[in-house]
Image (tube, rainbow, N blue to C red; front, side, top):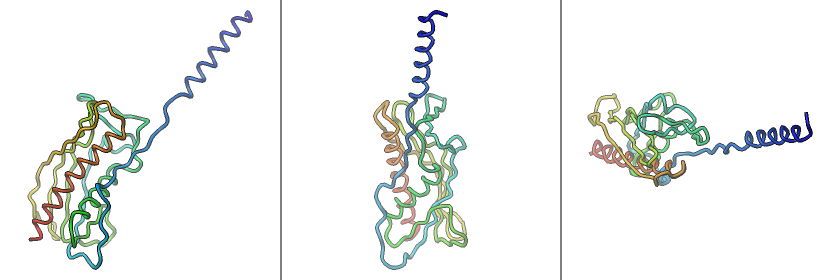
Length: 196
């Protein structure tokens, strides 16, 4: 083999090694409450158990899932900082708690032996964004009394927000926070109705 051939092979190997090490870094994202829950003094007169809310199996992964038409796209470099179902329960509970006076909201999963005056339960059918930045939360939900009987008849709700088209994962997650805040306001209003 000539010296030129050896140099060409060496250059190709260096280029190959450099290409392998150039994948983007993994970034982690978290859902956040609309505002921090206000500290209350004294005991709450009503305890609300928030959850469980079941989520689709395809969302039970660390990677953030988006939609491209009918297909789901998994981004290996944009991941949730905690399991998505846990984050949803925590954020919605915090949002509802900040919207209601004299109410303590506890998030699923509950400690053993927790008793609540109201239970907010449901099934999240969709919680994702498309490539145009449209975020959608579709959920079936209702409110039960302490004996787990319907107080608010189960309903289907849809919430939409828009991130900038082609925006990065951070903008998409902010839009997801927006739809969770919208859902939280509806829960708070219905809980108030059941307390009258």
